[in-house]
Image (tube, rainbow, N blue to C red; front, top):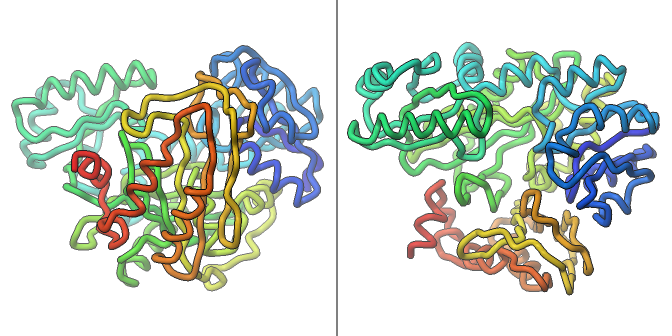
Length: 446
């Protein structure tokens, strides 16, 4: 077992990893930028090193400085959390070259599944359903026209190296196709340095359902059930729940088996997620694989009782999974709300000084947070500052528990999106689980 782990991240996920390490008797090292010197992840770690200026490129994305920090402090392994370097294959390779374990999957798998075209090919080879789409990157406008005519509108253009909705365009007619292609291509290059674009059939009003996976280095892979992540704004999830409500047992079984088949086919180990689109007829289609811990992992932990961060650490040391598929029992219902420092109506970030802070509590309430009274939220990073998770024996009770927890939460001095969460949770459509990725767009319009 490791004696010391460096956490190459910040905020609530760094704190989440610190807590798991403390429980396992492992010392922790955090890194921070000049803007984060007073952050909670700096205060809670056994050691913390400043590695650069406020911009992510100068600090949390600076691989040589992070490797140097691990070497200086004697950390044997690095946990990347999510975001930043968590899905960067070259970071994994540099860790290995420096004799430092990476707590996550192999560089080869990250590279392969990080390219959406390659990921689709791997899913299809494993027998996982995929939406009709192009097998390779589109080379020119004529290929775009031909592909769209063959598949039929509506279609969606996607950046092969993309994520978070960037480099993505929905097209409903030939008239807007070429402009959408060129715009998506330019955006993809600006965001990812890769302008490869492919095209898929667009599924109208789907649900976004994902399967949590866990594998070891000995070829064992299991899944820990499903989550619904359909409540999104600008293709970013804000509310997630487990299990996904209203799915048949047969669909859950098929999705779980398909996800495991894909993971085994690519030699996956550590925690990971296969994301699916599900239509109204319970057809499901592979969307992508996230080769890291997900923001929404707490809801799965709540309904399975499995500590995913602990399992990631054990897998990285080479231990076999102690859990089999038969050991995974889904009990109760959990819902998570991402608390962002942003205007709840316009989604404009709201950095600044937190003048008052109170976290909710009580049976079945969990708060993963980096916030505290007197913390000055920096403007350089993602606006999420906390996650509030509620758990109960049934979905309706979980919703009421979460409403109570959000009403109890106090964050003053900055704007937060709690009013939006409360409006969604109180809505009849959400309570009756009428979910789709268009939910929030339609909800705001109404």
